[in-house]
Length: 90
Image 1 (tube, rainbow, N blue to C red):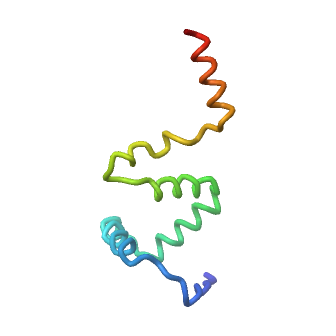
Image 2 (image 1 turned 135 degrees about the vertical axis):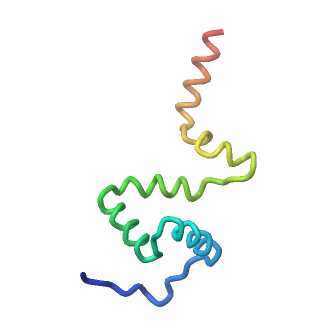
Image 3 (image 1 turned 180 degrees about the horizontal axis):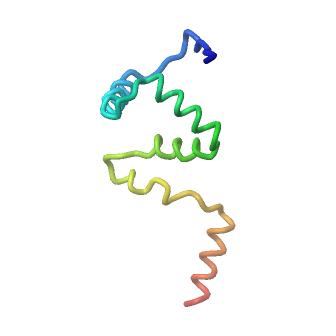
């Protein structure tokens, strides 16, 4: 197996790594295995990166977190057409 050394300034959030470490231990995986699995998944299905990004950025523990993914996907023209169609039905 060929290996590559990651740059020396590869910096990760300590708190996130520690939390992930607990989860990885329960799955009997180490950090290197998980990173390799992550890269394999991205290579096989690049669209998974979008799903991961949405999941990682989703806020939790607050009311506004419930609105993630519910607001902001429609563009202005689409919203205007929807509004007009609703008002015409009245």
